[in-house]
Length: 241
Ligand code: DGL
Image 1 (cartoon, helix red, strand yellow):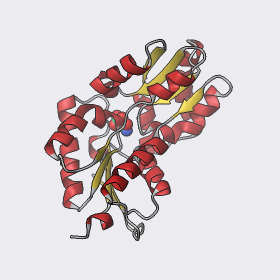
Image 2 (tube, protein in one colour):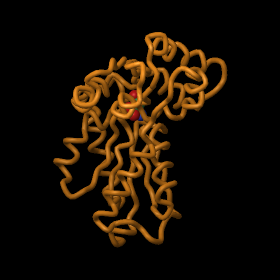
Image 3 (cartoon, helix red, strand yellow):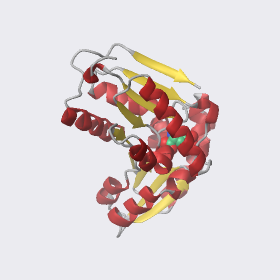
Image 4 (cartoon, rainbow, N blue to C red):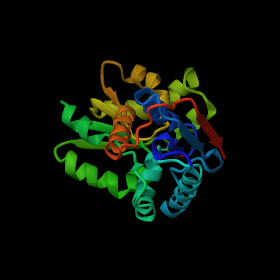
């Protein structure tokens, strides 16, 4: 087995959504190798029970660790909500990076006092989301919008065109009409639709997504263990279930 530094970083998601997170990590850490699991066989996760999503997250983590990964990025908000505590408890020596809707920066930047969060039902049901809202958005109205249709679009590779625009408009317009001046993309599939969401929200709301912040967190956790790879970056494995 390679030395810890030389091992890849592992990622998983219910499909191709989390590739935006992998790309952000690669951009920040170009010397890191990666393994990405796109669990298309079980997509979507958003309306599955937490138990079901947790079992899938544990299985993917096991696969990534068997492949020698030194870190696991749960590149899925829904899986983070359902499973991150269980994963950390089961593998205490493995650094995990999870996803959390960026409610805090949205609340801090909002001048209207209203922000919209687009995510899955599973993410909204999670303790993490509730606690973040209670902690960071005391004086902000946080509108929740379940946008499973966005996941379908992205999995189909349909991220532009009139049909995709109509789907995006149907979800985003009500948030804008209710006064939201920031839209939080709380699902890793949604940044793939960012240009379209920005087009619909132009001049009315800013779009916030956390890929870069997640990449910085991954770097921090590796750096503090002295696990950064000085010499890799050539192997990027993609596994689709
Ligand atoms: N990409 C996932 C997330 O960040 C979920 C999409 C789904 O499978 O429902 O929540």
